[in-house]
Amino acid sequence: MPLEAFASSQALTFGVELELQLVSLSDFDLTPASTDLLHLLRRKPFPGNVTPEITESMIEINSSVHTSYGPLLAELLEIRDTLVAASDVLNIGIAGGGTHPFQHWSEQRISSKQRFQELSSLYGYLAKQFTVFGQHVHIGCASGDDALYLLHALSRYIPHFIALSASSPFVQGHDSGFDSARLNSVFAFPMSGRAPFTLRWDDFANVYFAKMERTNIIRSMKDFYWDLRPKPEYGTIELRVCDTPLSVERAAALAAYLQAICRHLLARRDTGAGEAPCEDDYLVYNYNRFQASRFGLDGVITHPRTYEAIAIRDDILATANLVAPDAEALGGMDALAHIAAAATDGNDASFLRGQVERQGSAEGMVNAAIRRFRGERRTV
Image (cartoon, rainbow, N blue to C red):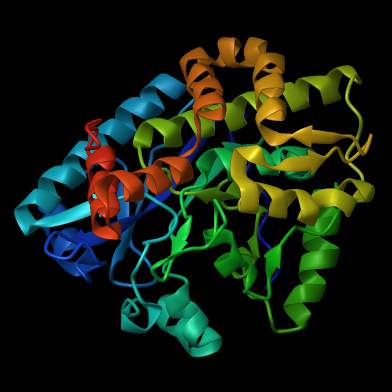
């Protein structure tokens, strides 16, 4: 069936989705506790929304739609506290992080939801290997053309969000050498990567999507695992490259940083000050994405227009300064300060590696991640 019309939403509204780990407090491995946790949460009012994920050791939380950073952070803190209280009843831990450091994919159980069972049937062991945990950020767009403009204009900034959110250095009991190993799991899916280059919604919906639908590979936008994808039913674009941070504070700050960049890009387009996105911007895209995944804030990216080599950390700090007026107009200056501090002090991947050294074990590192999600700052 044809792709639905793009639902206009208030520009620059935003919300987040966070995939979270459910952890046994006896051995700190993942535990298939989502059914019990969701049953318990249904018995009391829950801020936002909580749903099962592809395996039973995961859940996803969704915020409401917001216009500014403060209310988003307040809601995420309330969601966090509600989850922590429920997890205490069940004697399990809840943690962020893009991967669990030593779980084995073969031991995971696919959730009973029909779509997840279909994905398991189609993708085989990749479905269980998809026990990885990401943050998605939605940005409201007034039109489908605005959505596609932002989607492609943001390609230049994708490494920022990978590096700032990176929290998946360990896989299957070993340090992967990547700050964000999670993205390697996502890239294994055939419809991952970047969206095709088109700037008009009519072309995207009636030409590209129509062709893809005729192949019988694609039935809906859910079948695309792109780094950025339009969500016409919501009237948003959805950023999908972030690992789930260890704290909801960082999750809210990342969303507000994206909101400020989007405001800046739209303003430059509307005044004619900005360069229009073009296909050649993607010549360096995969390389820059790799640099951010592999080296995090220490990575070096290539500017898509000048081909200048830029340290990701420096580029983030320069961009934070550039969009400061936009963040101030949106009420996000505290979020921008959080981003600048993260770029300077290090990401969650660095924290997790440090915890292995301090705690002396991967189990101790997981326990530190649980405490950080709870809002505790004691790490030893």
